[in-house]
Length: 187
Image (tube, rainbow, N blue to C red; front, side, top):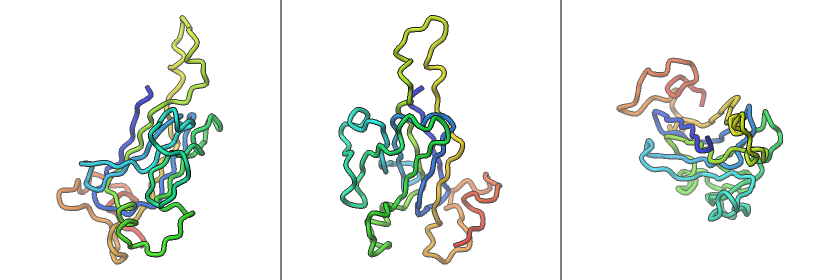
């Protein structure tokens, strides 16, 4: 199945730092990362990733970003190697840009989110899906599999909260494990 997504719904507003996906399988040939800042009502693409950007996302620039909030396609993380343990890394604020004021409205717009969704749009196959086999479908051996998904961020609290709490109407104590959205955090 090519079109698969993973969605992380948070219970409050966060300031996104980075996302690291570590794959057990091949990394996707094409994928995109979206963010929402209104609890999943609307979504904006954060970044596209593809082995061949012009093929998978023809209307998206594959050139390096000119401005910090440019949405581009990155081909660094979509090759066939490694076949396991490959990473996809997305930093909210690309270190190539010098940020004079991290509290500027355009920076805050870029890093503020309540949900993040990773859409795997095309499996990486080694070409054998084009071969006709009678006994077994060659596509059955291709799938998306992750070792880990790390999403780093901090509470939207102006630096003075000791814990992240759900907004009114949040799911409250659904998550009881340490490190979840509403547990104590070090600021």
